[in-house]
Image 1 (tube, rainbow, N blue to C red):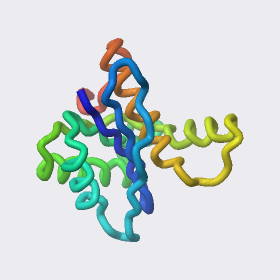
Image 2 (image 1 turned 120 degrees about the vertical axis):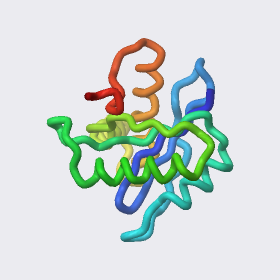
Image 3 (image 1 turned 30 degrees about the vertical axis):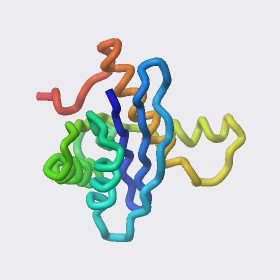
Image 4 (image 1 turned 90 degrees about the horizontal axis):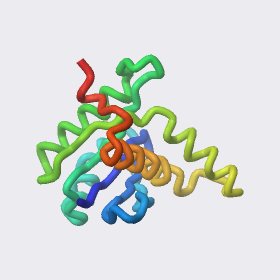
Length: 144
């Protein structure tokens, strides 16, 4: 099963891919987003090219589990993508993925922001894959 992970951002949207159960998710690309513009068109084009079975969109919940502005935007983007692409679109909790990506970069001696969005998308996607394999984790869509 091929999956794409999407970590939405105000200026850059990270994309990752997982298509081999024997390998971890990996960074794919970064989609630049114009200020105030929606990434839906560019993402729909990328999804059509890659033909994944599932698209995992990061849901940036507040630390207390509630929706803020970014989570509401992620829900809108996911709904728009679902209407445009043939793949299943799933929202997945992405709290602290960018922080985790930043820490990993520091540990590995990498500086700057280049590639961090795709790395955050990779962490998001791998957490989804791991939860589906082992039944751990949770899907925010399953919440009451």
